Image (tube, rainbow, N blue to C red; front, side):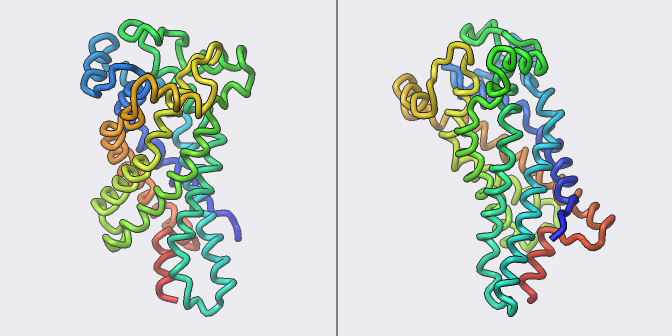
Length: 307
């Protein structure tokens, strides 16, 4: 089966849409997870007071340059894997009588595969973003300013720790993103089925938003650990690994720490993923109009159901 580039193009547009909507809330979420003062309103007030509106957009430069690429990789791998899995099912079942029972499994597995591939590119971006987001200097003394921007942060990490340093936290990201990515696209697919497809804007917004909230809720404790590990001082780390970070976080802040930032994360996830899937569906339709032989996600499902 030939590779379809429409998924990559649509994914790129989706990534930019999602980032522009969600970065301020993401900054609050990250700071909740790594600072002792955990209230989202308190974080927002302190950010405005000491850093102005700019504080909400710290660390955005690098993700903005790469958001399109990351989502392009995710949706590109997802779309092509899904079509490959569906074609494989058809070859093993020429009559196509039982194909329907494999659809959701294929969606989930394609999402897991896309999440795993994406981690290889996402880890350095997440590391730089969180290193910059955790810098306040004035109101959170533990997190003084060390980097003046994403390029400076990258150069500092590479000079001090080599290229390997850019993959600090990759193990926890792999655990986090593989499961959540599968659940993410599966939830979206189920919601679209219940709402009779992506024909209406509000259907896509609701399905995308719910998919984001559920996928994030499933891995919230892993996200807290990831944020703390990646915000750590790489030269003199407080945490020796995932287990050590989990134990120390529990002893220091209690069990509730693993849900820290959940409200803000859920709010952000709904907005971001509603915008992401809206950008994805619109771009996919546009690409389909330009390339008539390319089937969309929904058309694949419609073809499967009518056979």
